[in-house]
Length: 300
Length: 318
Image (cartoon, rainbow over all chains, first blue to last red; front, top):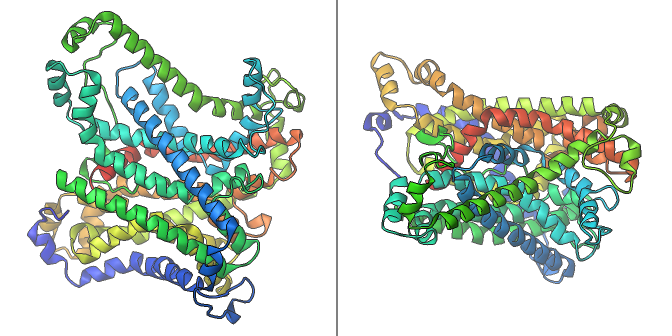
């Protein structure tokens, strides 16, 4: 990472530099690092909304309770299902599309312009839009399905079996464009000459992908999937507006569960403990991501 | 969370547009030569093309149909919304839903709140981040590494762990249900990413320029303001616009921190339409949702190329 830096620039970085760093670092330390540590501390107390001053240290009690909280593990399982269920199609479809949009096709401009829209939309609007699509009577999905003779009176978001898949589909829709655009940009960084050389040598499309495209794309693919996995695990707004965690908790992602625990039932300490467990899981993912990334850097 | 941007950093080549056609235009003409080179018959080649267009069409439908449905619903009169067989396009388009949306919820006021929060957050974040980015970009040491690491980490931890303590702190400062409190959270929340973007932009400015300024006797601040800042201006604007969209679209913090309807931002007010779930509300809901998207769409269209370029650069190289 430390590439050549002009020596004079480094020498000039005297103590005066510190005054320039403070404006951003002080607020970050006070309002981001600080609360994070405070939040971890809260996980070991019985803090509740309205009586935080009287909070007592309870040690690992919250974590012990979590261990026996069936609902929490259920939401954790749903969270993992959702995160993987969204990230994998996002990546596979995104990769396919990126390869497609890398070709010289007509209407490619249309696809690219459209791809930007879901990305710029507020998550709340995306969720509202899909509620309109899934609407049991006035929705376009049921209407289309019944037009094709495939049923057409499913209440997608309220069905115990359909809610999670329905929500996952929205997650894929909302996050795929960004994955696609990133992978596409990665594709365009791969040297074209290699492709041509491989084609001249008689390599088919699959072999060219395996031997030329994929090795060059791997670092991008890795960061995209790792970060998508983390963000999807932390998702809130989309599912909160789509189903509110229902029906019967079938789409209650960990963030929704923790939000309810903290701001509906006022259990700050308990919710903070949930946050800590989530951080622990994410740290593992993040460590994997950083390790992979360093390896990718070495390879370059 | 709306900052669904891969932890990226801009580098010098980041401003690139994702344009593909490096291959010679291989439309209908010139297919023969390429086919022979790839050792394939024209027929499989044509079938491959057809499959590609089919895939592209499927993608456009998947991407486009919810958008079209939102638009269509927004312009439908109640009679059509209640119909058992809704049509793709409104048969009798109306603007009534928009009028009704404004009557049902304080949309204008909410939009003003969103605008205030997003503008203030964007400006403050950029003003705070620019000098720091300048130092971090030119100095590589433990501090710079730690700051960069923090950017990645801060994008990753669940907000709920941060919002509970922030809620308590802001409550003690009497900043719950207030615009300054929300802006404070947005500034801090967008700072790491703003830093990351700006560091990339600063690195793209050749250090020689600063050295030349130093030779001429300009101090650090003077160099920053009169030499580097003008070159950085486009990057600063892009960063600010990005912070603006992020705050405009943000939902979670606003939901937790804003209690009364007259303080709430647009995304939170939009969810009020969902309260009573009658068919009659679908029209205004769609209309309001459509309106709420417009500003971020416009801003995004402006900075889109910069973001996608930065994404690639950041994702490839840490």
